[in-house]
Image (cartoon, rainbow, N blue to C red; front, side, top):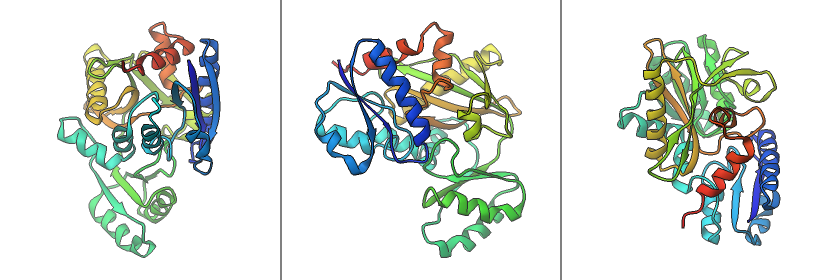
Length: 309
């Protein structure tokens, strides 16, 4: 097939996307596809408008890639692509909206509140509201951003202001939520719509205090245990919840669902990643490996799942 791979992009996750893109390109070439590689930028949309390919494989992360915008453009051009469509992408990227959907459908989520910080003059008021509404420790992060960029775990009240300002650099809306102590796990999901299956659960042991950017992407930044050391019943619950979350948002082909298992051994959903990392150190390929699916075979499987006819 003639496949264009969009990677790079302009978000804070550009470096990760460059690595993801290289992996996808190599895998597709190994499988015999004719690959066009595009380091995507909104300023160079003509490259997309002039595409003559059978399929687009989106290897972008963050804004203008994972949020439904590029998907909308490809829809208008009538070019099929791998992964979730406009609405599912936008919902998954909007943490507050997706948490509402999860909560309404019986999935456990941390108590949270969203605040508009577009007007810097409102920061004082927002800071006071957060102080009244949340007990330490809690998390402040951009409502729409990935890879834990702009995230602060607030342990002292003096850190609130700084946390707001840091998150506000990435988004005009910030999300504040209770900090949940526990085991971090993630569950890859893949399959045709309505027939999705969860892959083995992965336990993440970060070298830092939490699973931050360095833990995710630097070699040796975290340890991945596949399958996770959780009992059979909890494993089944995590996999069931992951597939449900994927379906509730209307995701397509693949996603990765992040959880924290709290002290009561309850899986609390954090978010759904519609374009999870596909770098050499990424979680999804690690899980696929456990069921005998090599990196190249995994990428090929996504291509096959993208055929809607």
